[in-house]
Image 1 (cartoon, rainbow over the protein chains, first blue to last red):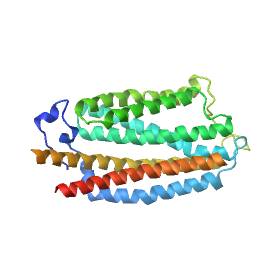
Image 2 (image 1 turned 120 degrees about the vertical axis):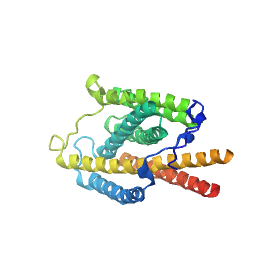
Image 3 (image 1 turned 30 degrees about the vertical axis):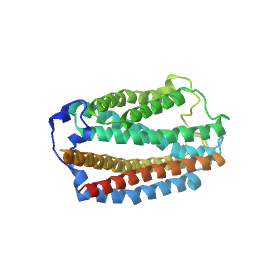
Image 4 (image 1 turned 90 degrees about the vertical axis):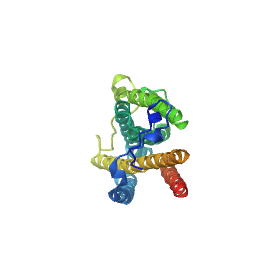
Length: 253
Length: 37
């Protein structure tokens, strides 16, 4: 699996990426399995703690009521979306420079996770908006740029869903890098344009309540741990997929 | 309150299905790898 096989045709644009399988050595070590096994209960426990805090510990927000509690998992979903696309950006850049399949596999895995979490942002946001604004969707700068980000990386995954070859992987890497430029635009959209999207929550006592802040921090930590676990699982899936493709290629001679 | 329940349910269902899909895909490939040995 940790093969250093370098077939001449693997260097051509049409070569299957699986012919260049060289992953990080730690994926083969027993410690990797242990890390995965530890991450499962740790991330599940922190998610349970965040859920408890979001429902019972954090105070009821003054104007939005219980619907505001969506925020405790909406914001971490957005954070993981951004973090995933940062990983796509860095891994795509390294893939273009080094032409090593492992960076492409990392970018593909992170892009898939980023799309899942950005989908959650786009589903939970409107549920909050309906309670707060009276409408599910407005073509606000932050909402629109987030939708654009989602569409860019759905396009990335569609490009990757067909045959994996070097040319397609390079094109996807370029999309992965350019697409990330939308992330700082989303982040700064609330200051660049007049938007309806909130930037600060007000509790009944005024200002961001310490209990709300603590709940948000625990939720952010729980989703970050979940992200690490899912990313490792997803990269391992790519590694195994490559190992299978390589074995079949070798069997065919 | 209904919107809150729906939002949390969506997050739980989507994340569970996604992780399950990774586990199932990995198991399928593991089986194929064992067959090809």
